Length: 308
Image 1 (cartoon, helix red, strand yellow):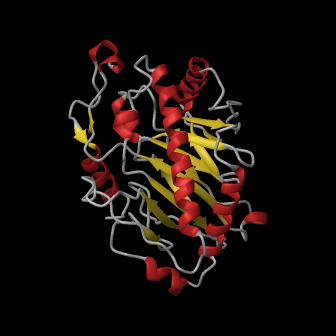
Image 2 (tube, rainbow, N blue to C red; image 1 turned 180 degrees about the horizontal axis):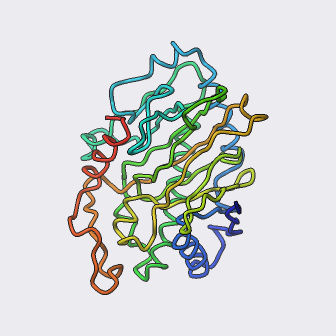
């Protein structure tokens, strides 16, 4: 199994046409890319990782106070709740969701719930709102590169994701019990537009390549893993694939250790209509002839993974 190699790209300084070709080819070939020099402050990342550990170390009864019947949209989702589409076993993980904070009276308030903040971890709110904004800015730069690769205006995606229903997930995979019949995260594809992932240097993340082989994804400390989600795959008529991936259980010598990561699921705005782009229809073939709103598509998929 060969690890996915990283792209040494500076999103702030690289020539955008060059960046778009490197990223676009990586996405078209594997659906994934690993990026250096992504522009998210290392000190901010370190603070966020520490606060995530502090929260998940809280007693179970304390964490469950923040579990609400909202489909996992905000706050805490307990261990053993989420499962991959078509899987008959739950994943071995717990997580916390932070969404976009909207001003009072915003037209998307019916689609996005207010955030929940734990009082037990000081400065968690300020830190993760700062990280959310940093992810948002980084994602916008990546979408500009993707737009150029697709030979459309580089600002094409700016309005499609403006005030989008994006979610920052704090993930904790506890130590794995011996002889477990479940895995940390079963094979799945992401629902959203693109996913930006920090903290995945602990082994376990794998993607399924075009030859049906599992390939390890091995970022170094501080590197950013980016992958295409189903919404963008649908929009681009499979030109940019939403690649199946999973988090396998650790080797026996690492089984007693927790695994933490912080994915940012960048979404289209709820009212955006996902309709196949004309320049992505080869020979006139449209794999997704029925347009659907980003919100309706999200609801369909959340039902499939046991969150609503």
